[in-house]
Image (cartoon, rainbow, N blue to C red; front, side, top):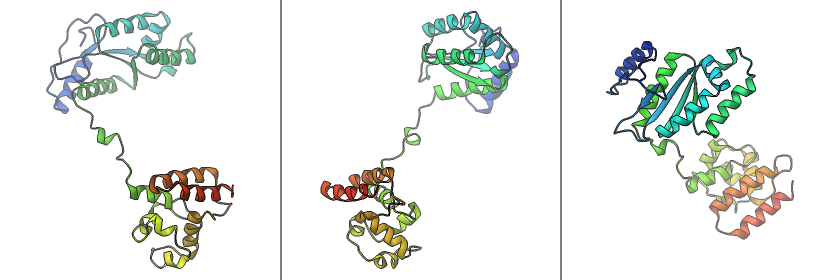
Length: 253
């Protein structure tokens, strides 16, 4: 941390360091190109340089070009560069129009590859710095980011829920007794309604109509056809069956 920075920030960082039990050392020293440096052997993203800018100073440094020169120098010295803007830029009175302020933010991100974050106040900024420090030292659990691959049953649920009056809840009830291949061979709605809870003859007939290509033109749309076709292609291995059903549905549009 730059020894010219506000001492209140040092206090906030030490309190949060203790609160989150991070066990890191926070030092104050003279820094030439930024306000904070996140570094350490256990960092997974290398060294992170962080520059704090009050809203007025941020606008002024854009207008005189200081910020862009500083960011370029930071990219030479650090693996990641972050600029935290404290306060609302709308409240800054200057000759610089709002669209130019926003344009400068976009330039920092796209042309310089800099992460730009706005904080309400210095307390928020301190939380951001601690958060950056915390995440720089921890791996990302990818299972929390990517959804698991859809199963065959998930795809069948999607196809059945395309019928008029149906949804995922009813579709789940349906697959307890029938698979799609079974439904496509059923002509009598009572066969479905007698087994599936909360499904009467009308909804049962709607499901039969969907898989026989006789869906009503008031309900079916081109988008519905595309979604239905997608699910069928995932489930059925017979292209001729798919084409036959989809062609019937397309004629209704």
